[in-house]
Length: 260
Image (cartoon, rainbow, N blue to C red; front, side, top):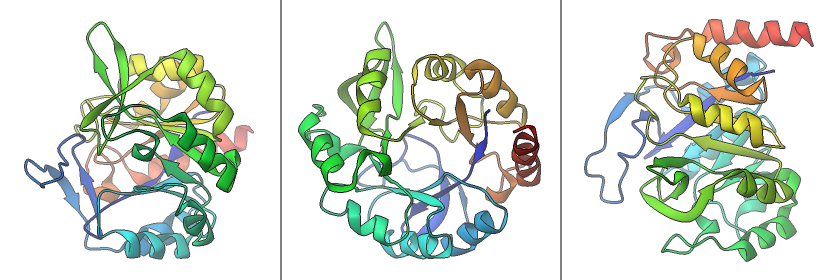
């Protein structure tokens, strides 16, 4: 059954909601929907109090390590962490309280070539059961979806196909997929991508991008046959949005637990 999963996106140490694809190395063109006066620790503690599981803390660039550690300390074992994860630091973040590490750009060369040896190295270091692979992607005409890296700026050599999901599912516990074309825009989810993930992923997967109403949860459940979870960011009142109430997302999850 589809669940609402929470998030904490960090930029320069602050909790923010940013339009996907606008975050560049030099900071030019950045579009910020929301910047919180509250700490990452506050959000993590709230998620813990409300019994939300499987959320993620994403470090968007440098200057976020302290805020990430504070969030993990407030909810040990309750949040995944991503951003700059590699074989050298993965165990350190797990020891800091992360339930899983989320790996993206490190699995590719600077030119975007997928490097399977690095994934094998990470599995050896921490075990596949503690790994989430971020397959955030962009839709390309006549090419389907292509996995991106470097804050969704660089297209990689890896297509998001059924074969890709099947192969990578042997090396991780979950997938995280941001639809970079609609992320942060509150204009609706990528329905085709959600349906594709529901049809082809053998392991749990969380989709993020474009959710603009509470009905997005119902849509994801229908399209994926309950096999994909949903993260809601910019539209959520918790992050300054007006379209989706956090309390309603909590109620959605509670109803799903009652069914189980």
